[in-house]
Length: 400
Ligand code: MLT
Image (cartoon, rainbow, N blue to C red; front, side, top):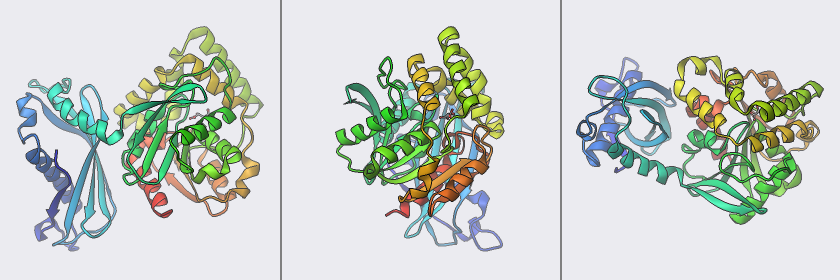
């Protein structure tokens, strides 16, 4: 499909304040989608496949006023492709100006009887091909002797995304897909996702050395390192062991303090339980604590995606990660010595790591920015991808 689409704002799109009315934005986003279909596969794409894409959820962020005569450029990308639903992100930019609005829309494909049906292959091929190009196929690299999977997306200054527990690289996709203009690297840590894991040898230092070695393989001298929770523990270790590989830091829903005695006992109990019972209990017990209550109630797609990711992880890699987290060093003494630009962001509804702890961590890092993400729990980049992506993009743009 051709992209981007440009549309002009007319006086009848505007309200008494003279600026474009918020409701008109939804119409413009819809017009831009139709225009894309018209330019590409045809407006009757869905009818041809006897399905109808119904919007189940629409989130819009308004970033800047627009006025009659302004010309808006619309970009669109696929951020999730499921069995019967898909999620599109649309961005509107003022031609010659900045971003004016971002929307995320979840669509369900309905059949003739009005019930959800699988997305027809013909539609999937079209959007799927686009998704593959946009997100980059995952690739395998041999890193320190282990077959390591990473997704490489786009060109520009590098950003390395480090996932949390018990997750994999795909948790960063919704945010990474919005950061056009950056070379995004999304690896699976050893033993998790599709990366090979050794029988033992799991420690924050090993994860950090793996990532430094991956940057070597990719011939990247340094990168912005963006870690969520356990990914943040790895980021601290990368900074400690390979300081010149870290250009800037994004610490998302993470903490600097190590496990206390009680925390270590709980890690051991979880390890023993995985060995005894398998992984089944993890998703049931962790999901309501990982995700904010808003997400649990209103975002079944995110709940399903996180559950799917949690249940797909190999037991060995999970046990390794639990061991590494249990034994991780205290990063608090290094906070005052951090000299790279740092953004601390945190879900305001995080039940695992209190917001106040993240704010105190930001206060201890010289010059660090702090952003609370409303209506998000421990997985802000998945729960509030648009808002989190915008906060990260603003931080990245200030580095240029
Ligand atoms: C994570 O999200 O990576 C974990 O919850 C972190 C932890 O258990 O300390």
